[in-house]
Image (cartoon, rainbow, N blue to C red; front, side):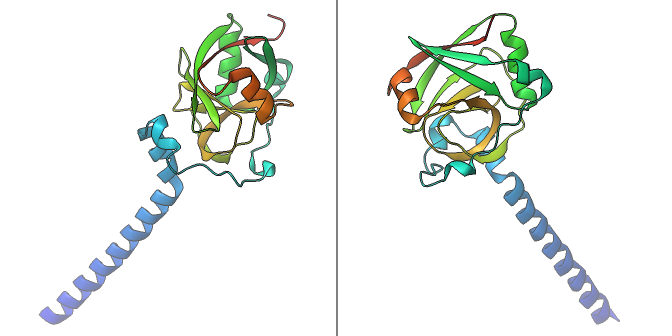
Amino acid sequence: MKRAIVVVALAGLLALAGCAQAQNSASSTAGGSSSSSASSSQAEVGSGSSATGASPAASPAVATSAESEEAVIVITAGDASFEMTPADTDAARDLVGKLQDGPVTVSLHAYGGFEHVGPLPWSLPQNDEQVTTIPGDVMLYQGDRITIFHGSNSWAYTPLGHIEGATADSLLAAFGDGDADVTLSIAGN
């Protein structure tokens, strides 16, 4: 009788251990890059996450909502201006709403040879998704940083929009390869 109880207990323990391992695997697969993104610094992002061979089709299409379809965000750096179509995300809608109150200047820093990133004066809603960026993509990083891509990178970001017609060359000509101040505003405001 004791032997039967021990065998049943061991079988139950093995079954529970197997379920726990499967759950841990699913959690790390589904949320690993998102939690890594939230706990890492921007410097750690580029230390192995760059995907230079990605095709332009890998970037998510910028879907627009009726509200953000009317709004165009103008990004100005020196004499260069770019028009960004907002993404259909809560973060992009919130950004449009905040810019309705007036323009905001952000100090961007070149990072990793593929992006310029800088702190926003407020946080925006995060809904990170794994994406591979293309030149002209504008993303939210860690809820309070705007990232403008002139190259490709694969990471978990919240889409803010896309700069229409932007190329790596046109963005680098405007931002340079170091720090750059950009002003975000709503077209017509």
